[in-house]
Length: 632
Image (cartoon, rainbow, N blue to C red; front, side, top):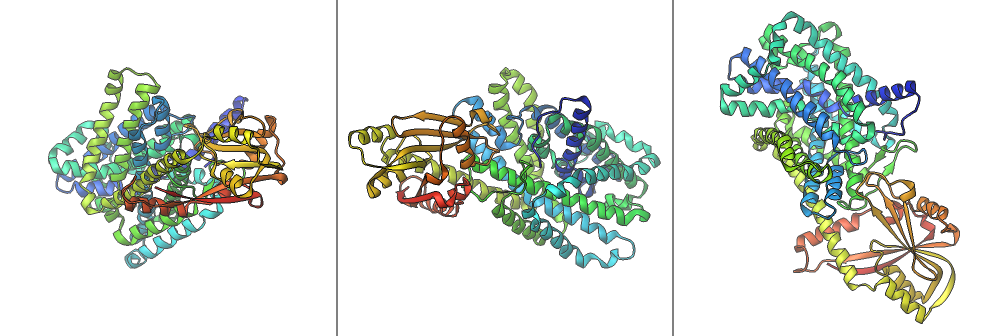
């Protein structure tokens, strides 16, 4: 996924770039929602089996249309996408924007951000499994081999998913070039499959009226709620429109949705409905019933490719969310590898890739069919949507300056709609919906523990440390032995003397000619302009305090930051510069701070965090590490 770059000035070039971004957005943003016709109609019709078949068909198609219109088009495309944080979207970007609007730290906002991000991971476990499994299950309806293929569905789906996770380390830049064109062909194929049946039974167009949706919901109260839970499967990719906004821009995503994705999806859903009117037996699996025998295999291959693309988009999104969480201090430093020198969004996080692969394969063999897996799908997404509306309320009220009545009038109906969908999906919890919630709960616990533990550690170190200015004053009175060269002390708290500096003075009894106390700060915005990257403050002879600012979508790189310092008049010779890094050993203390089990969890996360030398790209040969022990 590539971040948008400056707009070309020539009208023709602008149009070409807009078209390229819209095409790219189709492949990355709409992969999940574009493959929902494989299973959402089937599941909704299965839950509507207790009413008149004709009403079931018209009612389900009507519910699908109005869900896509209200949730995706009106809520996300028109309103939520307005809440961009420097062009970026997604739960964590929205949380950072809300924090900035409040101008103070709010634990409630952080908790909402953690919840939204954790639920994204929970959803990310199901999307690859259900998408690929749905496509492979289509082979059981294939001519000649279909009746004999059932035993091979799970193994083939597992092989495809394993191959997908295996190629992540190579980067998705090359494969990504094909995402857009393949997905465009997929959407046109969806429309082409549905159109002949719509022409055969044009009365299906009456299903666009909300009357049929209301009639179906009123046919049986409890049944109506369960149908809503299945219908929600058609909008499960809606969060991706907002989360991937920074990679393509609002206008290309909106154009891709309104011009291509929405019309093609509705033609397919209407076609599935018309097919069910023609052949009621097709209600068992209407999507694959649309495919003519003559083109069955090409469409199956295209379907498999589309589900792989949908899965890839979720995996790449998980990498991006992880990078944001690390930068915002919600996760420990992780090994984040860049797989492209030119494309900003091309990153690979080995730990996340392995965890997702294990989780997806576990779900695959746990649920075994896409119908069983559909029972687990939707709970995490609906909860994320509720979180998004809550954060959006803060942004609208404090950042946009809307009056309270306007916020309530606009957002309350969407919150009510999300809560209705959440209630309908809550019925699935016992049937498997607990799985993504359990995964999200575990990740949320890790995030909250890391944040709480980091705060305690910071307070403890700050309380037990010497003020930096106090140390400098004492060194002026009794200067130690000076040595040539520069020393850079990395610290998270620039107001106190770094532990590594104190150890150097205590054990080596020397002080470098130039001493720089350097702190890396993460801003509440995705990227920081180069002119705002560096702050340099002189603290007297031989001491400077340097603050390096990065956005939450950027990867810290200390050598490049030193290049920015050089342009600001603070030059370093890397060959005569030493980097001093303090390495803390954290020890649990019962009865203080967090519960003992949470202390141990935090200590485990500290031990498994990525090495700061690698994380900040510091030349390993110039690093001196000094340890200390801290009790929390």
